[in-house]
Every structure is written in C-alpha cells, then in structure tokens.
Image (cartoon, rainbow, N blue to C red):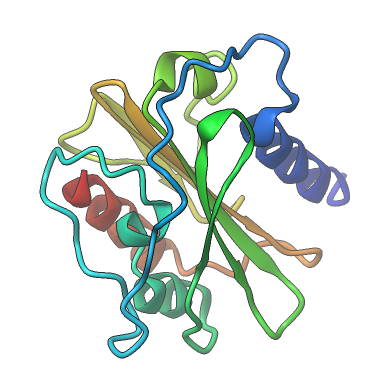
Length: 175
C-alpha cells in the first residue's frame, strides 16, 4: 500500500500540469519572468492579494527546506501547461517538491479532487486549505487563487508536521 502514495502524488502533479481534460485554458498567464532572490535563500513575499502567480515567491525556499529537513536550494520557476505557474525544488536526497499556482482554483483545484484528509491540519484565513505532512501536501485556496505544494519522495514524505503546517500558513499569508 505504501507504493500507492508516490503514484497518487505524481498523479496530482500531472493533473495540475495539464493532464486534466476537465480544465480549460482559462488561467491567466503571469508570464515567465518570475525571479527569486538568490541571496536570501527565499523569494521576497509578494503583496497580499497581488495574484502574482509566482509559485516560487509564494513558497519560501528556506521554509520548505526546514520542514523537509534538507539543505536550502532555490526553486526553479517555470510556466506549466495551461498557464499554470510552477516552482520545482530538486533536493539532493532524491526527492522533489513541486508547487503550482493557479488563478482559477475552481477549475484546477476542485474540492472533490483535493479533499482534506484525516491527518491534515486546516489552514486558517483561507477559502479552503490544509497541510498534511503525512503525504507531503499543502493546498491553499484563497478566493479563486490557489496553490498546491507536493513533496514527491519515493520513501514517503519526511516533512515535520508542525513546520509543514506553519509553511501552509506562511503560503496563505503571501496571497
């Protein structure tokens, strides 16, 4: 049963990168000029409610590294299919974390595909959101903006539950 977790997480990442037939190309593209502040180990926080679409700016590299117990590396920004903005961290210990931002959470992050599990901690101050360290996933939906962060590790997520929940709140406060 343990082998199903990586498959489910990879499937979730694929859904967000455009493999879902239900999603349409309605997400507004924020462009591919996303940058990070390499000197600080973390991208500067965007203005609240800015809708920047910059997944790397919404997820602080230092915070995700701390929650996963790995060395800090900068996320790599890219524009995914259907205008989704993504940020990827390829950690040296064989796992990868992927964050994807959408300006159309109803289409790309529907509640029926991303329900809150039994181990998830709710994130306050958002339309819908939770952090589940046991499966290495954070979902934040605020208004119609949303971000899904998935830690894909063949051995299972080693995320610290308290730090993972705190990271979820940090992400929510950056919207």
